[in-house]
Length: 540
Figure: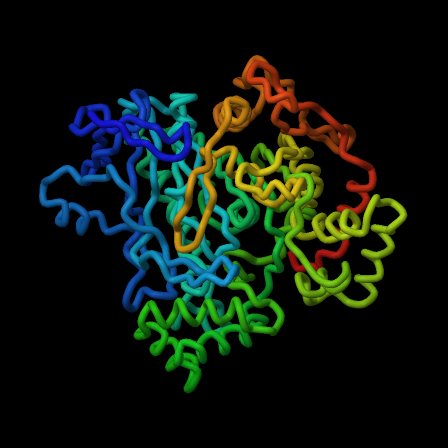
């Protein structure tokens, strides 16, 4: 046995150097050996759920895993799944860095399970979809073994899916699947859920008690799963943290983006079939440079590689589907952080116009009217609320209200600054909760991260968050297994719009909770109702 150390207190873990029965799982076609990171927790890294999307499979929907191939490659041996090996090709963070790290052969999941968990245990399952604007993110940077160590009665699965142009290149000629497939990265997630439904029982999980969750683009993915045509129901609850409410437009709207990207990759000439043949033969370096160039230089509208209305799996704007009651009828936990926004510009109108290109001058005048300067303490606060509500925060009100009609829903406002945030920024920014929930992770470029130190108060607050989340996973109610010191979390209804404010104790104590209940402000309710009325032009 040896000890591994890292900058975070929560990253000091035991790594057992030998195989024992409790960290080897037979999934039916092969056996995997995981890493026992705590006495009660095992991590199985990079378990494949689909065929590698390489060669002619590039830019296409994933194929189900060929288990015969996996058996042949294992050659009768237990497969080593004790260390992370690869992640999906990264896009740039947009901070002057270059993307391109990772591998195309990345359609895997990491599985966190109690030591000795086995078929028949029927433990509830939490499936995590990472954020990163659909452009970057490495699931290994968001460790869940402290969650299982705290609550060794769940199985947690983290999905790797294709990113940026490699995962979300769109073209109207992909409609019949001959040249390619729209929404490849989203279809990766669907295939992962299907694999989980079939095989998670071997790890002790219950395929009939799956909750999906994610933050930012991961929460956007959750929202899309809630309204998508996926065949059999693959999950039974949902957690959406700061939903990235981007325009979800038809592939035709992305044609100029496709042409720009193909040109930058050296594939700008010829028919769409010739362009796709060229892109499939291009080096990954050329593709990575091309998608970085899009980030830094493309000036047209709809400039992000994100999910589109493919007409088959995703058939309408998510908000419009929700307002019609066309969504999976499951319990929902949804929220955002206090000061976040995903749009920026010289003023409110320019920021919203850039983010939602279809907004008209009349629409923009409406936002100025709904968010008058007289209601805010500063122009910065006015801008953050007027742009933050439609781009991210309003999922809390719109979605929770709709889901409360058919199922239970809970909402929150996260109100503690990120552990990785500059001391000069007192605001609670987008993704602030991620560092707290995941061992102080501080995401960097090309799939890397560092872990910042955590204080005892940080660790106490993190354990409170984890308890709420896993209580929801276990019982569809964040209160059932909450910590004794944590306040009751009221459910959200259209008649009683209560929510919890998740906050570290301001005195930095470890034995009391800083969280408390508040009512959704009327101004937020009205502002989000206005945003919902703009769905045809927000396109989200």
